[in-house]
Length: 406
Image (cartoon, rainbow, N blue to C red; front, side):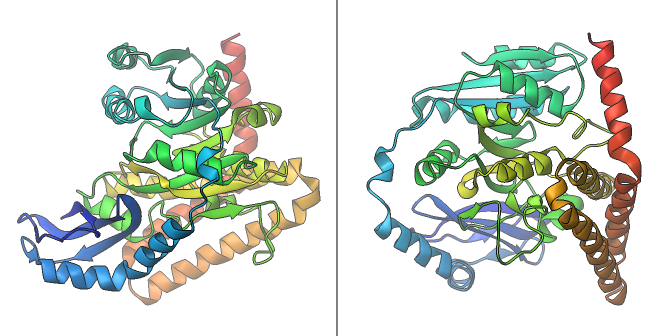
């Protein structure tokens, strides 16, 4: 079971897409004049062919509105924003024992960073206590990329090491299981120019491949998708009484950027979140929330896009959903203590989240969708664990790690 990922340029004639015998669908990545405008998963018989006529019909049904929006944006594009100065940029990749994936990401960055609109671009790789020299060797194979070793294992230890090692006024964070789109830097430059007062940015996350049942299922359930429309988030939002507590709507931590001085003023990332296996989440939610609470906006820009390698197996995916529940509740516990002004919203968010998860389980049971039920239970159980003292346990573990590395 696999889906063929195909990029289609809608401003040019479309060609038929032939599937291999083991491919049961197509993941269409749509562009208009090189701008990403849509993504759709289309089921098809194994080994079949989608004709050019079928693709044109699909494009009319699924992408016509976004093409129209793209045309209007091109017509209304501000000529002044193109001349707005950009800050020096640092790109940080935090990695541990995944040299092959790291090299793949660095290759994609090497192809785009030299012709950037930013006045300077540095790439900093933080080796988060890898057990071999493979990470250092992967970085050394690229000219001009910096290598930093962080001995304390934990993603937010590594993120903070990058924060202090970087020299750019803007710092972008990438996970090592992504590759960047060819217009990734252009998308970030556009977001900076269009939103000069923003404190942070997130971007589109598309699948890198859809070769396994777990990868297809995850994307069908929504994946990391936040859509193809720009969105600005501020500290208040009239259509959501719990905002900004539900910070997950802002984007994903595998592709984000911030004003570096702002992060330093906020104290950097909370090192008791995103610690690895015991608590593999919550750090991105926490930093999104704190940026908004500082009074600065965050902007989602779909042209600031990456391709993420989703979990390969059902067991790995089930654990990911568990980690989402765990990280969400650990973040809410931490934030409810540190932000007394919005404590009632945090309590309300906990109630809403558990109720929403319960409703999803009921829907899965009514439709006899066993896998939805199992994934729902995993996420719900993660939430229970997160609420039952995981953040405090993580703080104790992190303190012990700091003492060992003094």
